[in-house]
Image 1 (cartoon, rainbow, N blue to C red):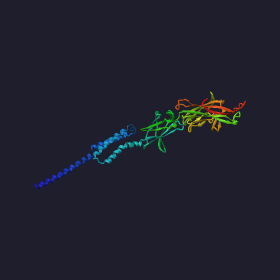
Image 2 (spheres, one colour):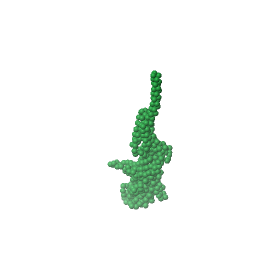
Image 3 (cartoon, rainbow, N blue to C red):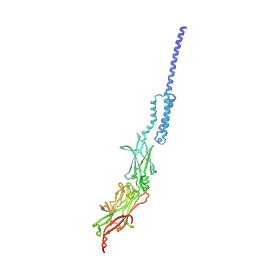
Image 4 (cartoon, one colour):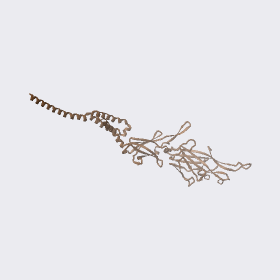
Length: 418
Protein backbone atom coordinates (compact mmCIF):
# COMPACT_ATOMS: atom_id res chain seq x y z
CA UNK A 1 0.00 0.00 0.00
CA UNK A 2 2.72 2.28 0.98
CA UNK A 3 4.85 1.59 -2.11
CA UNK A 4 1.85 1.75 -4.32
CA UNK A 5 0.90 5.00 -2.81
CA UNK A 6 4.30 6.55 -3.39
CA UNK A 7 4.45 5.28 -6.94
CA UNK A 8 1.01 6.55 -7.67
CA UNK A 9 1.93 9.98 -6.35
CA UNK A 10 5.04 10.13 -8.57
CA UNK A 11 3.05 9.19 -11.65
CA UNK A 12 0.43 11.82 -10.89
CA UNK A 13 3.12 14.50 -10.32
CA UNK A 14 4.79 13.71 -13.70
CA UNK A 15 1.46 13.88 -15.52
CA UNK A 16 0.71 17.22 -13.94
CA UNK A 17 4.10 18.59 -15.05
CA UNK A 18 3.57 17.49 -18.65
CA UNK A 19 0.13 19.12 -18.74
CA UNK A 20 1.62 22.43 -17.63
CA UNK A 21 4.26 22.33 -20.39
CA UNK A 22 1.65 21.73 -23.01
CA UNK A 23 -0.50 24.53 -21.67
CA UNK A 24 2.36 27.06 -21.85
CA UNK A 25 3.20 26.07 -25.40
CA UNK A 26 -0.39 26.65 -26.49
CA UNK A 27 -0.72 30.08 -24.87
CA UNK A 28 2.44 31.83 -26.18
CA UNK A 29 1.57 31.81 -29.93
CA UNK A 30 -1.88 33.05 -29.13
CA UNK A 31 -0.46 36.13 -27.24
CA UNK A 32 1.96 36.99 -30.09
CA UNK A 33 -0.74 36.93 -32.68
CA UNK A 34 -2.97 39.13 -30.57
CA UNK A 35 -0.12 41.71 -30.15
CA UNK A 36 0.91 42.21 -33.79
CA UNK A 37 -1.85 40.92 -36.01
CA UNK A 38 -4.84 41.95 -33.98
CA UNK A 39 -7.87 43.57 -35.51
CA UNK A 40 -7.15 47.14 -34.25
CA UNK A 41 -3.64 47.14 -35.72
CA UNK A 42 -4.90 45.88 -39.08
CA UNK A 43 -7.62 48.53 -39.06
CA UNK A 44 -5.16 51.27 -38.12
CA UNK A 45 -2.73 50.25 -40.88
CA UNK A 46 -5.54 50.17 -43.42
CA UNK A 47 -6.72 53.64 -42.42
CA UNK A 48 -3.11 54.94 -42.69
CA UNK A 49 -2.86 53.62 -46.25
CA UNK A 50 -6.24 55.16 -47.11
CA UNK A 51 -5.20 58.51 -45.62
CA UNK A 52 -1.95 58.46 -47.62
CA UNK A 53 -3.82 57.86 -50.89
CA UNK A 54 -6.29 60.65 -50.14
CA UNK A 55 -3.39 62.96 -49.20
CA UNK A 56 -1.79 62.53 -52.62
CA UNK A 57 -5.10 63.52 -54.21
CA UNK A 58 -5.97 66.57 -52.10
CA UNK A 59 -2.36 67.84 -51.93
CA UNK A 60 -2.41 68.64 -55.66
CA UNK A 61 -1.98 72.43 -56.02
CA UNK A 62 -4.99 72.66 -58.32
CA UNK A 63 -7.21 71.24 -55.56
CA UNK A 64 -5.52 73.10 -52.72
CA UNK A 65 -6.08 76.45 -54.42
CA UNK A 66 -9.86 75.93 -54.53
CA UNK A 67 -10.58 73.36 -51.82
CA UNK A 68 -7.91 73.79 -49.17
CA UNK A 69 -10.28 72.48 -46.46
CA UNK A 70 -10.08 68.97 -48.00
CA UNK A 71 -6.61 68.68 -46.46
CA UNK A 72 -8.33 68.04 -43.13
CA UNK A 73 -9.82 64.73 -44.34
CA UNK A 74 -6.58 62.68 -44.43
CA UNK A 75 -5.44 64.32 -41.18
CA UNK A 76 -8.58 63.12 -39.39
CA UNK A 77 -8.18 59.61 -40.83
CA UNK A 78 -4.53 59.50 -39.73
CA UNK A 79 -5.56 60.63 -36.26
CA UNK A 80 -8.01 57.71 -35.97
CA UNK A 81 -5.38 55.31 -37.34
CA UNK A 82 -2.81 56.57 -34.85
CA UNK A 83 -5.18 56.03 -31.95
CA UNK A 84 -6.03 52.46 -32.99
CA UNK A 85 -2.38 51.42 -33.38
CA UNK A 86 -1.18 53.29 -30.29
CA UNK A 87 -3.95 51.81 -28.15
CA UNK A 88 -3.43 48.27 -29.54
CA UNK A 89 0.21 48.10 -28.43
CA UNK A 90 -0.53 49.29 -24.95
CA UNK A 91 0.14 52.97 -25.62
CA UNK A 92 3.87 52.43 -25.87
CA UNK A 93 6.46 54.00 -28.22
CA UNK A 94 4.33 57.14 -28.53
CA UNK A 95 7.12 59.37 -29.86
CA UNK A 96 8.22 56.89 -32.54
CA UNK A 97 4.67 56.30 -33.77
CA UNK A 98 3.97 60.04 -33.83
CA UNK A 99 7.06 60.67 -36.00
CA UNK A 100 5.97 57.96 -38.45
CA UNK A 101 2.51 59.47 -38.78
CA UNK A 102 3.88 62.99 -39.22
CA UNK A 103 6.05 61.75 -42.07
CA UNK A 104 3.05 60.03 -43.62
CA UNK A 105 1.03 63.25 -43.43
CA UNK A 106 3.79 65.41 -44.90
CA UNK A 107 5.12 63.12 -47.63
CA UNK A 108 2.46 63.90 -50.31
CA UNK A 109 3.04 67.65 -49.96
CA UNK A 110 6.81 67.11 -50.07
CA UNK A 111 6.52 65.07 -53.26
CA UNK A 112 4.33 67.72 -54.87
CA UNK A 113 6.82 70.46 -54.02
CA UNK A 114 9.55 68.61 -55.92
CA UNK A 115 7.69 68.99 -59.21
CA UNK A 116 5.64 72.20 -58.87
CA UNK A 117 6.26 75.68 -57.51
CA UNK A 118 5.03 79.26 -57.42
CA UNK A 119 5.48 81.59 -60.39
CA UNK A 120 6.64 85.17 -60.01
CA UNK A 121 6.43 87.94 -62.62
CA UNK A 122 9.83 89.39 -61.89
CA UNK A 123 10.05 92.00 -64.62
CA UNK A 124 8.06 93.95 -67.19
CA UNK A 125 9.91 95.49 -70.14
CA UNK A 126 9.02 97.17 -73.40
CA UNK A 127 10.33 95.99 -76.75
CA UNK A 128 12.67 98.11 -78.83
CA UNK A 129 9.88 99.25 -81.13
CA UNK A 130 7.56 99.88 -78.13
CA UNK A 131 4.88 97.64 -79.65
CA UNK A 132 5.14 94.82 -77.11
CA UNK A 133 5.28 94.40 -73.34
CA UNK A 134 7.56 91.51 -72.35
CA UNK A 135 7.00 89.72 -69.02
CA UNK A 136 9.77 87.74 -67.36
CA UNK A 137 8.36 84.88 -65.27
CA UNK A 138 10.36 82.78 -62.84
CA UNK A 139 9.36 79.73 -60.80
CA UNK A 140 10.32 79.06 -57.20
CA UNK A 141 9.84 76.07 -54.91
CA UNK A 142 10.07 73.33 -57.54
CA UNK A 143 13.16 71.12 -57.36
CA UNK A 144 12.76 69.50 -60.76
CA UNK A 145 10.69 72.20 -62.47
CA UNK A 146 7.12 72.10 -63.68
CA UNK A 147 5.96 70.66 -66.95
CA UNK A 148 3.46 73.06 -68.52
CA UNK A 149 3.07 74.53 -71.99
CA UNK A 150 0.53 77.33 -71.62
CA UNK A 151 -0.48 80.22 -69.42
CA UNK A 152 -3.76 82.07 -68.92
CA UNK A 153 -3.19 85.82 -69.15
CA UNK A 154 -5.63 88.60 -68.31
CA UNK A 155 -5.22 92.39 -68.17
CA UNK A 156 -7.43 94.88 -66.38
CA UNK A 157 -7.53 98.65 -66.88
CA UNK A 158 -9.25 100.92 -64.42
CA UNK A 159 -10.89 97.85 -62.87
CA UNK A 160 -12.26 96.38 -66.13
CA UNK A 161 -10.85 93.41 -68.03
CA UNK A 162 -9.50 94.47 -71.42
CA UNK A 163 -7.69 91.28 -72.41
CA UNK A 164 -7.91 87.56 -71.69
CA UNK A 165 -6.24 84.70 -73.54
CA UNK A 166 -4.46 81.37 -73.13
CA UNK A 167 -1.03 81.50 -74.76
CA UNK A 168 1.94 79.18 -75.17
CA UNK A 169 4.41 79.41 -72.32
CA UNK A 170 7.19 77.38 -70.72
CA UNK A 171 10.22 77.89 -68.47
CA UNK A 172 12.76 77.48 -71.27
CA UNK A 173 15.45 80.12 -70.64
CA UNK A 174 18.18 80.60 -68.10
CA UNK A 175 20.37 83.43 -66.84
CA UNK A 176 22.52 84.22 -63.80
CA UNK A 177 19.41 84.25 -61.60
CA UNK A 178 18.09 80.88 -62.74
CA UNK A 179 15.49 79.53 -65.14
CA UNK A 180 12.69 81.69 -66.52
CA UNK A 181 10.18 82.09 -69.31
CA UNK A 182 8.83 85.06 -71.27
CA UNK A 183 5.40 86.19 -72.38
CA UNK A 184 5.01 88.87 -75.06
CA UNK A 185 1.86 91.01 -75.15
CA UNK A 186 1.16 93.26 -78.15
CA UNK A 187 0.02 96.60 -76.69
CA UNK A 188 -2.35 97.31 -79.57
CA UNK A 189 -4.36 94.19 -78.65
CA UNK A 190 -5.52 95.56 -75.29
CA UNK A 191 -4.69 99.27 -75.01
CA UNK A 192 -7.70 101.21 -73.75
CA UNK A 193 -6.35 104.60 -72.66
CA UNK A 194 -3.51 106.32 -70.88
CA UNK A 195 -2.28 104.86 -67.62
CA UNK A 196 -2.84 108.25 -65.94
CA UNK A 197 -5.69 110.73 -65.77
CA UNK A 198 -6.60 114.03 -64.21
CA UNK A 199 -8.68 114.18 -61.06
CA UNK A 200 -10.22 117.49 -60.06
CA UNK A 201 -11.32 118.12 -56.49
CA UNK A 202 -12.67 121.64 -56.18
CA UNK A 203 -10.04 123.93 -57.67
CA UNK A 204 -7.25 121.40 -57.18
CA UNK A 205 -6.25 119.31 -60.18
CA UNK A 206 -4.00 116.33 -59.63
CA UNK A 207 -2.75 113.45 -61.73
CA UNK A 208 -3.85 110.06 -60.44
CA UNK A 209 -2.97 106.64 -61.72
CA UNK A 210 -5.23 104.35 -63.72
CA UNK A 211 -3.13 101.19 -63.75
CA UNK A 212 -2.92 98.31 -66.16
CA UNK A 213 -2.66 95.11 -64.10
CA UNK A 214 -1.64 91.84 -65.76
CA UNK A 215 -2.36 88.47 -64.13
CA UNK A 216 -0.70 85.23 -65.23
CA UNK A 217 -2.07 81.82 -64.21
CA UNK A 218 0.17 78.82 -64.81
CA UNK A 219 -1.12 75.50 -63.56
CA UNK A 220 -2.21 76.14 -59.99
CA UNK A 221 0.00 79.18 -59.44
CA UNK A 222 -0.84 82.81 -60.16
CA UNK A 223 0.86 86.20 -59.97
CA UNK A 224 -0.04 89.79 -60.86
CA UNK A 225 1.95 92.93 -61.60
CA UNK A 226 1.11 96.55 -62.34
CA UNK A 227 2.56 97.53 -65.71
CA UNK A 228 4.68 100.66 -66.04
CA UNK A 229 2.49 103.70 -66.63
CA UNK A 230 5.25 105.30 -68.72
CA UNK A 231 5.07 102.43 -71.20
CA UNK A 232 1.32 102.86 -71.56
CA UNK A 233 0.91 106.58 -72.11
CA UNK A 234 0.03 106.57 -75.80
CA UNK A 235 -2.96 108.89 -76.28
CA UNK A 236 -2.19 112.56 -76.96
CA UNK A 237 -4.27 114.71 -74.63
CA UNK A 238 -2.82 118.19 -75.11
CA UNK A 239 -1.12 120.13 -77.91
CA UNK A 240 0.63 123.49 -77.98
CA UNK A 241 2.41 125.47 -80.67
CA UNK A 242 4.63 128.53 -80.64
CA UNK A 243 6.55 130.80 -83.00
CA UNK A 244 9.47 133.09 -82.22
CA UNK A 245 10.58 136.01 -84.35
CA UNK A 246 14.12 135.95 -85.70
CA UNK A 247 15.54 139.46 -85.49
CA UNK A 248 17.88 141.08 -87.98
CA UNK A 249 19.92 144.25 -87.45
CA UNK A 250 21.60 146.90 -89.62
CA UNK A 251 22.42 145.46 -93.02
CA UNK A 252 19.94 142.61 -92.47
CA UNK A 253 17.10 145.11 -92.77
CA UNK A 254 15.72 147.25 -95.57
CA UNK A 255 15.04 150.98 -95.42
CA UNK A 256 17.85 151.50 -92.88
CA UNK A 257 15.77 150.08 -90.05
CA UNK A 258 17.49 149.46 -86.75
CA UNK A 259 15.93 145.98 -86.46
CA UNK A 260 13.58 143.84 -88.44
CA UNK A 261 11.92 140.43 -88.59
CA UNK A 262 13.89 138.13 -90.87
CA UNK A 263 11.96 134.96 -90.18
CA UNK A 264 10.19 132.83 -87.56
CA UNK A 265 11.17 129.68 -85.71
CA UNK A 266 8.41 127.11 -85.21
CA UNK A 267 7.91 124.40 -82.59
CA UNK A 268 5.13 122.35 -81.10
CA UNK A 269 4.38 120.01 -78.19
CA UNK A 270 2.12 116.94 -78.14
CA UNK A 271 1.61 114.81 -75.07
CA UNK A 272 -0.11 114.42 -71.74
CA UNK A 273 -2.32 117.19 -70.45
CA UNK A 274 -0.40 119.54 -68.18
CA UNK A 275 -1.50 122.12 -65.65
CA UNK A 276 -2.00 125.71 -66.80
CA UNK A 277 0.20 126.89 -69.65
CA UNK A 278 2.87 124.28 -69.06
CA UNK A 279 3.93 122.23 -72.10
CA UNK A 280 2.28 118.81 -72.46
CA UNK A 281 3.99 115.94 -70.68
CA UNK A 282 6.39 113.62 -72.45
CA UNK A 283 5.12 110.50 -74.22
CA UNK A 284 8.20 108.67 -75.53
CA UNK A 285 6.27 105.68 -76.89
CA UNK A 286 3.34 107.44 -78.57
CA UNK A 287 2.61 107.35 -82.31
CA UNK A 288 0.97 110.37 -83.97
CA UNK A 289 1.15 112.89 -86.81
CA UNK A 290 1.50 116.67 -86.56
CA UNK A 291 0.34 119.21 -89.12
CA UNK A 292 1.48 122.82 -88.52
CA UNK A 293 0.59 125.91 -90.53
CA UNK A 294 0.98 129.65 -90.06
CA UNK A 295 -1.79 131.81 -91.48
CA UNK A 296 -2.18 135.43 -92.39
CA UNK A 297 -5.92 135.83 -92.16
CA UNK A 298 -7.21 132.92 -94.22
CA UNK A 299 -4.07 132.69 -96.34
CA UNK A 300 -1.37 130.14 -95.56
CA UNK A 301 1.97 131.88 -94.99
CA UNK A 302 3.95 128.75 -93.98
CA UNK A 303 2.83 125.16 -94.49
CA UNK A 304 5.15 122.84 -92.64
CA UNK A 305 5.46 119.28 -93.97
CA UNK A 306 3.45 116.59 -92.19
CA UNK A 307 5.48 115.22 -89.28
CA UNK A 308 5.10 111.54 -88.39
CA UNK A 309 6.16 110.46 -84.90
CA UNK A 310 6.71 106.77 -84.19
CA UNK A 311 8.29 105.48 -80.99
CA UNK A 312 9.99 108.78 -80.19
CA UNK A 313 11.34 109.39 -83.70
CA UNK A 314 9.87 112.29 -85.71
CA UNK A 315 10.33 112.37 -89.48
CA UNK A 316 9.20 114.70 -92.26
CA UNK A 317 10.11 115.77 -95.78
CA UNK A 318 12.93 118.28 -95.37
CA UNK A 319 12.51 119.67 -98.88
CA UNK A 320 16.28 119.44 -99.47
CA UNK A 321 17.06 121.43 -96.36
CA UNK A 322 14.24 123.95 -96.60
CA UNK A 323 12.77 122.44 -93.44
CA UNK A 324 15.78 121.33 -91.43
CA UNK A 325 17.19 117.83 -91.53
CA UNK A 326 13.88 115.96 -91.71
CA UNK A 327 14.12 114.08 -88.39
CA UNK A 328 14.32 114.57 -84.63
CA UNK A 329 14.24 112.53 -81.41
CA UNK A 330 11.55 113.50 -78.92
CA UNK A 331 9.79 112.16 -75.86
CA UNK A 332 12.57 111.09 -73.50
CA UNK A 333 13.23 114.50 -71.96
CA UNK A 334 10.04 116.27 -72.99
CA UNK A 335 7.39 116.58 -75.66
CA UNK A 336 8.89 119.47 -77.63
CA UNK A 337 9.04 118.95 -81.39
CA UNK A 338 11.31 121.44 -83.14
CA UNK A 339 10.20 122.47 -86.65
CA UNK A 340 13.33 123.95 -88.12
CA UNK A 341 13.69 126.03 -91.26
CA UNK A 342 16.73 126.54 -93.44
CA UNK A 343 18.66 129.32 -91.64
CA UNK A 344 20.53 129.02 -88.33
CA UNK A 345 19.86 131.46 -85.51
CA UNK A 346 22.30 131.43 -82.60
CA UNK A 347 19.95 133.71 -80.71
CA UNK A 348 17.04 131.28 -81.00
CA UNK A 349 19.24 128.17 -80.91
CA UNK A 350 17.45 126.67 -83.89
CA UNK A 351 16.87 127.11 -87.59
CA UNK A 352 14.15 129.50 -88.67
CA UNK A 353 11.99 129.87 -91.77
CA UNK A 354 13.20 133.08 -93.52
CA UNK A 355 10.61 135.69 -94.34
CA UNK A 356 11.51 135.40 -98.02
CA UNK A 357 10.04 131.86 -97.94
CA UNK A 358 6.70 133.00 -96.59
CA UNK A 359 3.79 132.95 -99.00
CA UNK A 360 2.52 136.15 -97.31
CA UNK A 361 4.73 138.56 -95.33
CA UNK A 362 2.59 141.67 -94.81
CA UNK A 363 2.33 143.46 -91.50
CA UNK A 364 -0.64 142.38 -89.45
CA UNK A 365 -1.94 139.48 -87.40
CA UNK A 366 -0.86 135.88 -87.96
CA UNK A 367 -1.99 132.71 -86.28
CA UNK A 368 -0.11 129.44 -85.93
CA UNK A 369 -2.16 126.23 -85.78
CA UNK A 370 -0.90 122.80 -84.72
CA UNK A 371 -3.08 119.72 -85.26
CA UNK A 372 -2.17 116.31 -83.87
CA UNK A 373 -3.99 113.15 -84.94
CA UNK A 374 -3.77 109.47 -84.03
CA UNK A 375 -5.33 106.26 -85.26
CA UNK A 376 -6.97 103.39 -83.39
CA UNK A 377 -6.33 102.03 -80.79
CA UNK A 378 -4.46 105.10 -79.54
CA UNK A 379 -7.34 107.44 -80.33
CA UNK A 380 -10.72 107.57 -82.01
CA UNK A 381 -9.18 109.69 -84.78
CA UNK A 382 -10.24 113.07 -83.42
CA UNK A 383 -7.89 116.04 -83.85
CA UNK A 384 -6.21 117.68 -80.87
CA UNK A 385 -5.22 121.23 -81.84
CA UNK A 386 -3.87 124.51 -80.59
CA UNK A 387 -3.77 128.00 -82.10
CA UNK A 388 -1.58 130.92 -81.04
CA UNK A 389 -1.67 134.52 -82.35
CA UNK A 390 1.05 137.04 -83.26
CA UNK A 391 1.24 140.66 -84.39
CA UNK A 392 3.84 141.58 -86.98
CA UNK A 393 4.30 145.35 -86.67
CA UNK A 394 6.71 148.17 -87.45
CA UNK A 395 7.58 151.14 -85.30
CA UNK A 396 9.35 154.35 -86.23
CA UNK A 397 10.24 157.98 -85.61
CA UNK A 398 7.11 160.05 -85.33
CA UNK A 399 8.89 162.91 -87.19
CA UNK A 400 8.38 166.63 -86.86
CA UNK A 401 6.45 169.15 -88.94
CA UNK A 402 5.94 167.98 -92.49
CA UNK A 403 8.36 165.05 -91.96
CA UNK A 404 6.33 161.96 -91.08
CA UNK A 405 9.44 160.15 -89.93
CA UNK A 406 10.79 156.74 -90.95
CA UNK A 407 10.15 153.31 -89.52
CA UNK A 408 13.09 152.22 -87.39
CA UNK A 409 12.20 148.71 -86.15
CA UNK A 410 9.91 145.74 -86.51
CA UNK A 411 8.49 143.36 -83.91
CA UNK A 412 6.85 139.96 -83.64
CA UNK A 413 4.61 139.92 -80.58
CA UNK A 414 2.39 137.19 -79.18
CA UNK A 415 -1.19 138.32 -78.59
CA UNK A 416 -4.35 136.65 -77.32
CA UNK A 417 -6.28 136.99 -80.60
CA UNK A 418 -6.41 138.79 -83.88
